[in-house]
Length: 446
Image (cartoon, rainbow, N blue to C red; front, side, top):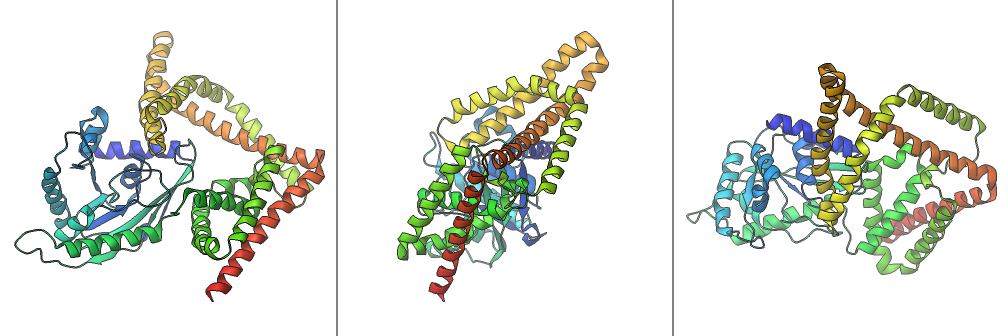
C-alpha cells in the first residue's frame, strides 16, 4: 500500500507541477540514522515531495489533527507517520509528545530516517518562522546521527503547472550525546543544535526580511533570465530561477542600506518595462531574438505547423480530454477557493487532494456510461483512454499557448518594429543595470 500511494502521489505531483527537480541527492547518506529538516511553505504538498523524491524511506512527524481526517489520516498511517501534539490544536495534549519522540528515536536508532518541519507550521511568509526545539531534542536523544537540511522552492506554489525544486544540502554530524539520568538533553545543547539547524536552513532557502523585497527580486529575476534565455521553454527552469533569486537577494540588503537610490533606479526601470509589456500584451520570454532572424522565424513556423498536424492526428483524444475533464477541473478550482480561502499555503494541497478524488471519479462514471452503451471491452479500455486523453489535452493547451505567445511577439515585430525594439532596449538596460550593481557590490565587499 505504501508503494502504491507513493507512486500515485508522484504521478499527481508530475501532473500538477510542470517540472519537478531534485538537487543534491548524492549528498544524502545511503545508510545510517538520518534526520531531514525542511522549510514548510506548502502544507501537505511539502511532505509529499519528500516522500516521493527523497532517496531514503522516510517517516514523518505530522500534526495530530491530520490523523483524524478520513482520507489523510489513513495515508499518514500507511506512510508510518508519527503524530505531534501542539498546544494550539484544540483537544491536543502536548504531554503525549513524549511517546512520539520515543517512537522517532527508535526509528533513528534502528538506522531509519525521519523528516520533520521544525518551524512547526506551514505558512506563506517570506522568511523562516522561529524553529521549535523538537528536531534538536530528537536528534540529541538518538545520537549519533546525521542531519540533512533540505529546502523546498515553488515558482508559484498555488498555481497549476508551475514548477518546484527540492534541494538537499550537505549533512552535518550530531555526535554521541550523553542524556544523563533525566533522559532529556540539556537546554543549552538543544538551543545550540536548534540554532545550527536554523542557520543551515537560512543558508539553503530563499528568504527575505520583507515580502516587498522578495517581490522586487522576483520581478528583476524574471526579466534578467528572459534576456539570457535562448528559448521560451527556459521560462520553466525552476533551478535557474532559484539560483538567480538567491544571488539577487544576497545583495539586496546591502543595496538597501548603502545604495537606496540604486534600488529605486532598478525599480523604476522594471515598472516602466512591465507597463510596456502589458500594453503590448506579450511575455518577456517570447521576446526573442535580439534581432529578427528570418531563418529562425521559418524554423519556428514549420515547428508550429508540425505541432498543429500532430494535434490533428490526436484531435479526437484532445477533444475527449477537454470535454471530459473540464467539469472536474473547474470544480477543483471552486473547492480550492472555498476551502483554502486566502490561506495561500493550502491552495495547492486542496487542489491536489480534490484532483486525486474527482478525476478518477470522472473516469469511473464515464467508463460505466460507456460500458453500458458500448460493451464491457470499452469499459476496461476507457481506463487507459481517459487518462491518455487528459494528457493529450493538457499538452495541446500548453503548446498552443506557447505558439500563440510567439506568434503575438512576431506580430508585434512586423506591425510595430519601433515598439519591439524599444522593449528589447528596455530589457537590456535592466540587465546591464543589474550587472553593474553586482560589480558595485563586489567592489564594496572587496
